[in-house]
Image 1 (cartoon, protein in one colour):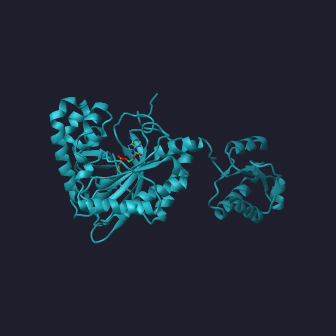
Image 2 (cartoon, helix red, strand yellow):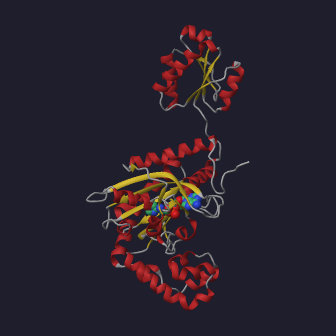
Image 3 (spheres, helix red, strand yellow):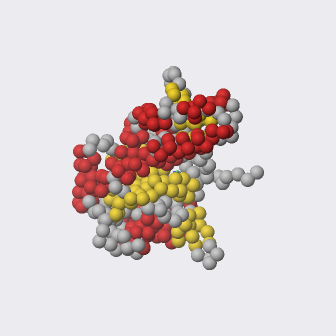
Length: 421
Ligand code: HAM
């Protein structure tokens, strides 16, 4: 039997319902902040990521799905959305003399070791803002995350970690100092960190190895290298978050795995879903547009991993609470099928927020009612001989102990509409 590829998951109807509900809430928050949706290709030139995300990052070094197309061009399935977004906005001249606030949603691909919350195909919702140099937009982006957790009812289960990397120059100076300090100690570093020493030394700060962490205790500290402007930017962001009463912790070890960041970096982390607890992450990337061939333009953004947000909600509220439909329409006799279909259409037109499923396949009313129950619907509507003759379908309350009602179509619409509030 042919099976799915390791690390690539099927989302089946039950999970699909929860997925839609969660994604819709997140989208509502983004749209409510006037971010505009864009759709970008899954395949890009490999060079976009080696230049954009950075040659020395784990993603580019060992996690990309890269293939040659029939012309021999090297293409890569996008491992993240920021580089492609920047490419598209430069290509279409949308960064010149204007600002942008956009979002995107879709699958990303990384050849990582699969585990709970970490997959080889995963789904991100990302937001990016361009043309804003100040900390006000950093605050807006962080607050967007906060609004997601509010909309999903999980603010008490995520924490915000923040850091600043300073300007590109500050980051380069710090990198040099860190390498100078660690090089004579290289023998005592763990293997990964030794490799990173020449390629991507800032990531050593992330090492989980206790001996490496002990060596880092006396290393030069990133905050000491942040210049005055960088510090003022970070202080500005902190003031805005304080004013909005959004709690955070400053984590000077937070450096992020992608090379494009400058100044602010942040992560929203939960302890409830295991080792892969970062549900949303991002920061500022002021040099990226220029690095990808555009004019210097400040940028900042984040992406959240939808599968991880789903795990977070599952741990918070338990799985399987969602229904497949709100209303299940039963038809007692095939002769009334057309009447019932017309009724269903009328209800859908009048009640666009309701998911109305009509019974298909005939059968006894008892079996149809069983299906209605299994769908999780709150209401069943029954159409039979009498109902058609009187133009008054029967409404049954499936989740409450209330008598069946016989209502004209208009009364039925009013009744359901009131039940939705
Ligand atoms: P990232 O930290 O690599 O950043 O990914 C963002 C989020 O995507 C992570 O916090 C996590 O929730 C989810 N994620 C990443 N890898 C996996 C995986 N293998 N399986 C499941 N979920 C995963 C970026 O991608 C940046 N482009 C974010 C950004 C946008 N920065 C600025 N703008």
